[in-house]
Every structure is written in C-alpha cells, then in structure tokens.
Image 1 (cartoon, rainbow, N blue to C red):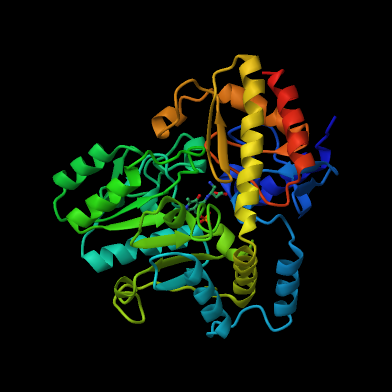
Image 2: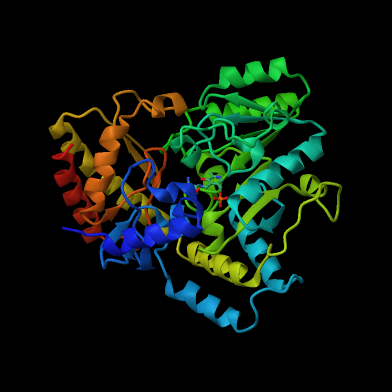
Length: 429
Ligand code: KE4
C-alpha cells in the first residue's frame, strides 16, 4: 500500500511560504481531495515521489513531455547550452533556428514570436488581433482555458472551473464586457453574437480540440463554421494550440482538422519542458507587432537560449520521428478500447472522448460536447477513481476538467498495468 508521509510533510512546509503550497492551483488536488504528491524526479514514462512511489505518468507535465521525461537528447542539449550562459537579452541565431523549425511544421503561418508561457502567447495574440482589426470584443467558449490573463477568466476551463469560480475576482467589469461567451460546438450562438455586435468583434479564440473541460472534440463543421463567420465579419480566428500544437500532428490541429487559423498560439511541447510560449500568424498580421508596428509586446526571457535549445531539440526529434504520432495514437486507442469492457461490466454511466493522444473519461451518460455537459459528470465518482488509480501507481490529471496526455515512452506493459489498475479501481466505485 502506498504511503505519502514525506509528501504530506513537504506540503505543510510549502503551504507556509507558497499560497496553497503550489505554484499552479490545479496541482493542489483541491478537485480530488487528499494531499498532492511531491516528486523527486521523473524519467521516461515514470514519476517518482518523495516516498519512493513510482507512477505511470498521464499528464506529461500537462502536455510538454510528449517523448517522456528527461529525454537524453533534450537534456544533453540543455546541459551543453548552459555552459554558454543562460540568458542574454540579446538576439541569438538559435531563436531564428527554432522559428524556422516551428514554421516548417505548422501550416498557414509566416512568422512567429516567442514568449514564456501559453498565457502570454494567448494574451498577446488577442492584443494583436485587436490592434490589427481596430476592434475590441473577443468571443471565447465556456470551458475553454487560454491561461490566466484577465480577458480569459470568464467561464474559463481547467483549474478555474475546478474552483467553481470561472469568473475570477480581480477581473474588472470593464475587461469582462469585452469578452463574449458562447457554448463550445454551438455555431448558431456565435452567429447571433456577431449579429448583435456588428463590426465590434476582433477575434474568436478557441481550443480547436478542447482539453480543459476534459477532452471535448469539435463537432463536424464547427471549426469550419467559425472560419466562415470570421471571414464574413472581418474577425480573426485564433486557434489556441497550446495543448494541441505539435501533439495532435506536427502541424497541430490546423493540420489534422484541416481548418486554417489566422493566429495560432503554442506552449508546452514547443518548449520541450522549459518555459516557452509562442504565437504565429501571416506576415501582414505580424507586421502590426512591435518593433515593426504599434502593438506592443515584450519579454526579458523571451527567446531564452536554454528554453530555445530545449524546444528546438524537441521539435527536431518530433519532425525526425513522425512515427511518434502514430505510436501515441495507437497507445491511446489501445487504452480506450480496453477500458470499455470494464466499464460495461461495471454497468456505470460513462463517456470517453478521444482524439489522438488526448483522452478523458467522464462519469455521465450524456455525451460530453461542451462545458455544460462536461459539468454533469459525477465528481464524487471521479475522486474515488483518481485516488484508486493513484494508489495503484497511475498518475491521472487531478481534475475531471482536464485531458490525459500520453507520452511516447509509455510501454505496452505500462498500458496493461494501467488497465489492471483500472479494473481494480472500478470495483471500488
Ligand atoms: P500556461 O500559461 O499554463 O503555459 O498555458 C495556458 C494555457 C493556454 N491554453 C491552453 C489550451 C491550455 O491548456 C493552457 C494551460 N493548460 C493547463 C492544463 N489544463 C496548465 C496546467 C496548469 O494550469 O497548471
């Protein structure tokens, strides 16, 4: 039986000096109860905590560790680079290299600007869209999460939902009035909003495959419909590909769903596990960005050489090994198809949503197509499920409003061990 003594004493220590003991709320296990485990290290598909427990990892640091933890080539590249200095605040050829690498993988984008997080990428993309169109309003979808910038914390997903406060205090009414909300997969509603706000909408921002309500797939025609509405009304379509970018395909959702965005934002995988975000667009849009144009955006550590090195190595590995994507898809499908008989045998209401290596299990008999249906999931069952898997050595996202992320270091044996833990845990529900 696993024990967590060291983690719980470390958690009490942490809470004295860090709000909630964590540097990102979802890590605090508030949605599932209990004490968060504290890690000492991670390698390949495995996490190792302070009490010497080992877990098969299904969050991959919420996406970045798509090839598994401490990938030797990424680590080697970082070590080598560190000896040359860790930050300059002065341009390097490295930034051009990773820009060229990323742009060679994603469709429809001419230029890219690097920042330090997905939040920064999304907030910069919205400012650029507002500057480019001269308009103020933004359409987002309930349950989608684009980071913690004020404009997005209106019915946000991920941790914001977990805390049941999707409209965060501190976001002013002035800001909130410019963010218009629609239901994911509801094209009619978006058309209505455009009609009610003629020539005022700068952009739609959307997770092309949502991962912050659990995994929620776009219905057939949804993204294509957003594309047409933006074209008809002179707004920009922003794909928030912080999760899907370089994960669903080298070219992300734009490639695998064949819908063109005007601006795409990236994070997670693009940094190879170091803090990197980015946003990309056509040249004429990026020409509005300082120092070329009037839209200001900056960052001391943007283009940081260590982070660029980690990201460049990761992208080069993914481009050199496209079989990673089929391998990830196959492993996720293997898990998906073998979970079903256990769930059927248990006779429990469930939905499984999956695209590529993004998957989530919802304890509800209603298809999960938007935030409202995602919120219908039985969270009490989810808590028991989460801890049942954790104590059997499987680390799932500690919230029902998250997608699982497989990494390609997960072996067949790990998958079978996960399914064994799954069948035993279901018996406890
Ligand atoms: P960051 O600022 O956390 O790098 O990225 C924000 C962001 C933007 N867009 C999407 C689609 C995202 O999923 C995220 C961040 N994802 C969460 C997990 N759902 C990060 C985990 C956390 O908040 O600790």
